[in-house]
Length: 162
Image 1 (tube, rainbow, N blue to C red):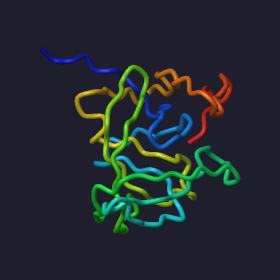
Image 2 (image 1 turned 180 degrees about the vertical axis):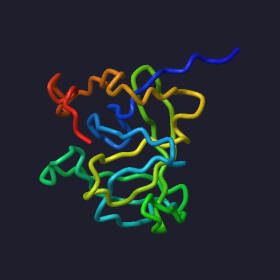
Image 3 (image 1 turned 180 degrees about the horizontal axis):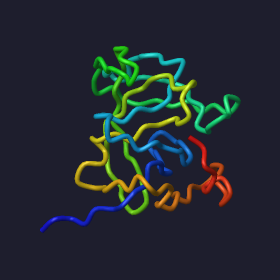
Image 4 (image 1 turned 90 degrees about the vertical axis):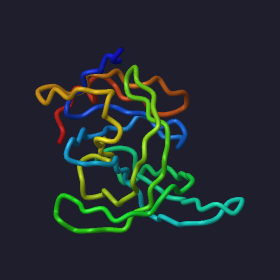
């Protein structure tokens, strides 16, 4: 029996609860193999003999004042070629993602996306077997209700920002 896939638009709200992040706008990117998350001040460290990474991020578009610090175990380091053709060695973490009715774990690379409109890319590794993309739509999923984080309002959900 095949599980029913959820239809998503070209951009959606996602929630990364294990990182303590509020809802974050993600660009759905079928051209990207792996998800990517905005990160700066990326610092590797060890915890109980295992590699971890500490990083900061600006969770909101057009807001470089709000910062959240996160920590996560490192699952890999790999070279990733971005859309501009530049290759960068990135830390890879694995974390839970809540997107509408779907909850799953995916690998996410950490990279500075300050100059990009979206703080996160939702790549094929997270979408496979779960989602169908309707490129004519956006924000088809309801954002998760998250305690003690700033929630979006209806105007923000419907704004047409790239």
